[in-house]
Amino acid sequence: MQITYFVTGKTNLAPIQQITAEYYKRLSRYARFEEVVIDNTAIKSTDPQLIKQREGELLLKKILPTDFLILLDEKGKEYTSVGYAEYLQKLFLQSHKRICFVVGGAYGFSDAVYTRANAKLCLSKMTFSHQIIRVVFAEQLYRAFTILHNEPYHHQ
Figure 1: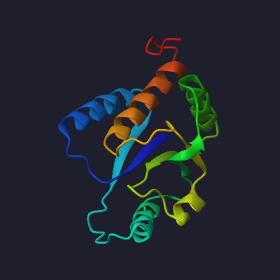
Figure 2: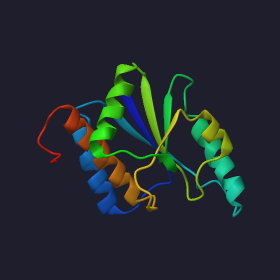
Figure 3: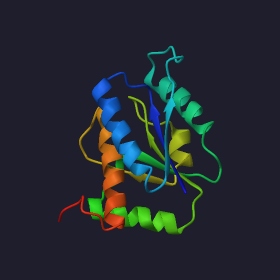
Figure 4: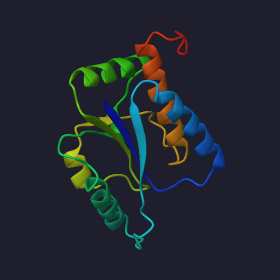
């Protein structure tokens, strides 16, 4: 199984790069994992609707019809860490070839992306920067795998 994490825009903060790289390395023990950056630097607009539309088009070009697409969205379903691990386990048992998680741009997702999505996941009711959410998501995904493998990372 493949897990692909789509993020909009690059990060140039070395600490963020280092921490996410560490969690990505840890994740490789459990699944094929890749981060794909949606490069939005060519979008030359200040109109939020146009930016969302263009970012959505760039993302949807990379999504396959067989992908299970999960948006990281404030209106998505919230889980505890254990509940999230159980949710992932159910997805794994459904034999999806590729599970894709997506962080949208500063203005969120276009209607076309919402229409294509199979699920929405809320990591917190708070809003995080696009830099910080990379770390939060990677850590929670790693935590979920350690829970599923009964490893001593998560404490109850």
